[in-house]
Image 1: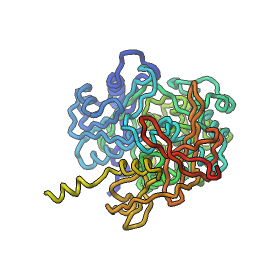
Image 2: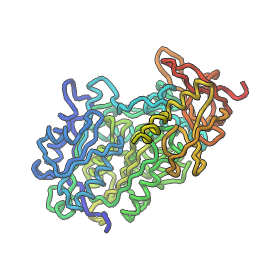
Image 3: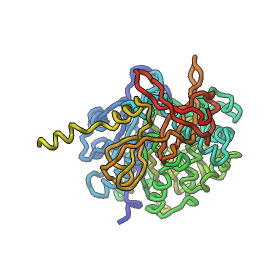
Image 4: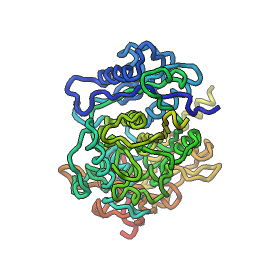
Length: 382
Length: 131
């Protein structure tokens, strides 16, 4: 039995984004996003019977969200594998809906890190085999991967910078993007070094933000307000937690998650009209373009040259402006899915990709640790 | 019950065995008695084959820089963080001393030394093999 097309995203919304101001909690933003997603779908709160969340604030995130929202779910899933968690929740929600363990799933997340003063990440205990050396989590781990890609494939800082510039060009077309001013490759190269070869403009934003998605059965989705956006396929994979345990720093578990997602969906990279590739750092989309089959291993850095992933380019990537220029609330995976849904619905205004019927969202978590790939499609590709 | 307790009492936590090696100037790692995989960080189960029999070995302490970054901070010099592939077939995070943080190169041959880290914990670091 295939999961393809059995469930659909019927509601998608962000909370307030950027810097929401003092006193707001992540739950306040979850409240905003949920109200907006319900309105988007034409569903009522009482319809929600499945709840999915992950958090670096709340150790029992579905309990906290359920209490705040007044939702008493019969299915609850707090799978936590970093920023990819919410793409995983979409797969898990689809499986739960198919098994009739719930009918309407809410996936939600938020952070108010910027209003609280800065980056807020996970709080694992110190690792005796890494902490003594003082890597800055998580940027140094991604920097190590970038160093290896540069060594093996001749990737340059200029090519990394092209990823940031393309993201900014998309952000200029998105009124909700946090940074919309001009950005050049030279600006990125001249910006403050954080953990070489990654400078501050190779790193994602640190913002407040959150979102909510509503997922239901294909059958129920047909009667709702917006055209259903179907889950065609999804796959998850993780191979390590700590960067010193990553077998090859130039190959991520997206080779597995992507293959699983493509197989379930019955599509390939050539069918993807919009690719949302979790860009916590500029090296990420380069690795994911390779690992998800858009180019050969080692060719990601030339793939991104010359505006190829920017507006008007061959492959629209991170059309909201990405974690680099639009919003990055600590964990970003839910926002990937919201943009993919909007592109497939044709709601993206100036940044709309014409005729996109299949979108790929690749969530990343930890330090290139977890990868979850989802393929979404309109009714036309069912 | 008594036998099990004795067995449990005699077991030393992997991280303590690792530290004891460092205190003696040695870089300890594990080798799986079943599949011969080199295992690092030290564990209670082989992550390759699942065997619970891991034997401690002393590394010769020679390796090659696999990846490198220089971590920049305000008000201090950049510090180097590397991943080193040891000749015995395991990888670890460390730092290379005696070279400017930005000038550590992938492929450089390095050898192990012990330093006193914060809180008097011994820490495994590397210097250029030729030095």
